[in-house]
Length: 188
Image 1 (cartoon, rainbow, N blue to C red):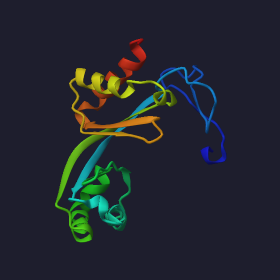
Image 2: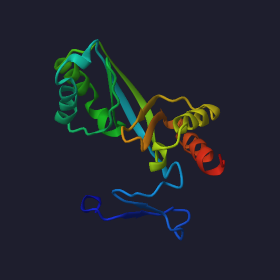
Image 3: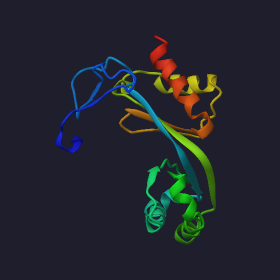
């Protein structure tokens, strides 16, 4: 539907009678709200690969992702930096292939280190209004800090329409509530 340019109407499970949010390809309207939604999922693990000057190595990311592909594992998210690349995958899919993937990464790119972390959740804060409102990221991070949620990963999409944070599975519900409260319950 989205590929064909057909708008999608997302409704609130708790209040289906509300008109919901219309997901459209583009609009000239200025968004009324900073964020449109908060969504997330538990059950991820991260594979953090570090190698000095990996950014100068042509094909590094492709080589790493090919190891996951060869093991039949799709990735959910992949933040990276100059010397580091982290791949988030569904923990249930990864556990049976863990040693094969790690060995494959070592063979493919000869990293300095590979570190694994399990029991992670990803939380996405989404909205077209994020692009034009200063301090959105600050509000998210302050709300999480106030709720005593440790942030394991931060990524903002280049469109500035979403921010994804990684937290421990145990902090997932607390994180969702803290972000919801700062944008919906509190009127700033």
